[in-house]
Length: 185
Image (cartoon, rainbow, N blue to C red):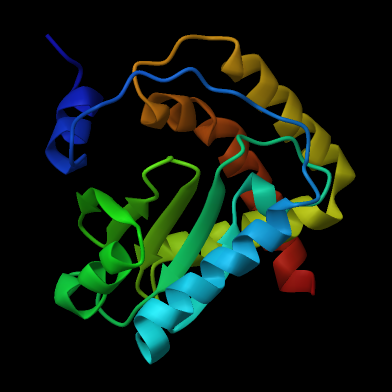
């Protein structure tokens, strides 16, 4: 018998939940180049349909330990209109993994690139960019976040989403500081 969260995941994950062993690595200077190659693939596949393509997540923060997964934010005008982008991304080597209201996530077969698709006014777009930019300028929160991730990586997780959920409290705290910083800059 699963939890409410498990039932939710079962309804949005294409292919079901996947037990995972989380590995957090030291920062790799090659991550920005990996993102640049993925960004070029996405632009080649989507053209102007991609209103923005951003490197997000921990691999986008120099010096931050991270799961060696390149997270990409793709902004499109209408997430629900999958015909405008999903088949093109699938043709570029990304498989649809998550379908939930206002968000799609596609990934590579090797699970080393996650492409999050949102609309321009989605709160997630602001949150991803604010958190990334904040962690780039605040060494204390960057260190704090690395420690939390390394601690959580020691635990078994029934799915990557459970690991992500476990980080949500610290992320919300950092986002609060990021929003104050953003308002001042």
